[in-house]
Amino acid sequence: MAIDWAATGTWMQAWAGFTQAGAVAFVGWKGANVFKTWRRQKIEERKMDAAERILTLTYRLRRAFTVIRSPMMWAGALDAAEKRLREAGVTLDSLPELKRKNMIYHQAMLDRINSFEAEWAEIGAVTPIAAALFGKVVEEQLELLWRQRGAVAVASESYADDRGQDNEFTAQLRADMWEGMGKHNGAGDRITEIIDGVVTKVEAALLPVLREDAEPRPT
Image 1 (tube, rainbow, N blue to C red):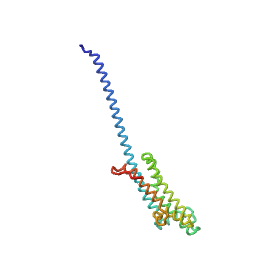
Image 2: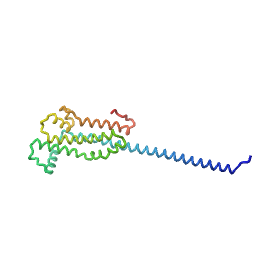
Image 3: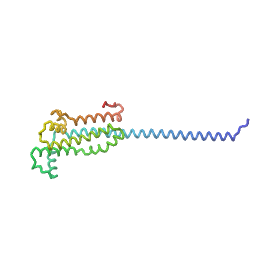
Image 4: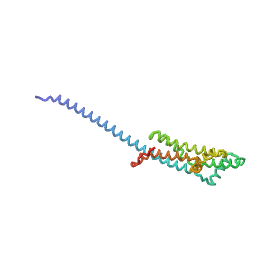
């Protein structure tokens, strides 16, 4: 039987076309997988960088609150606070002695809080990143840390106006202002408890991202 070379050539061209199309499809599929792998790797890198940044900030803030809430207030800090109030036009000399001392102490506490402005700004910068990459849990913990800043400032402001007429209220103000004071006066140390809880939850969420041997902690 004679071979129809014309027909054979047509089929060979057709198969060549199929092969070429298959090769193009394979290259496309392979390229898509490579892109997905590259994208996944980049996301993991971003998560590791963000986890390190967030966890480092959490530790820095824990230390910051220890400094802010230290019961030891140096005379130089009080002198600087008094000078700041006088420059702002506050007539301290006309105030009763207790009110004057408490206002100066309140200003010294605000100065301590403001000395960590870089950390407060970092919370604002990193919280959206935490929400995007790690969800509500980490976002909420950072917001909790931020709210403790306000809690200490409010306690200090209230202390400036306190007359000591309500012993329980005064004890709570001092517990919020000074780390460890609540354990001595029976008011508890709710701010330290909140901060410790934040650190525990942030570590549980982020340490597994940074360390292969880290196991998530119970929350």
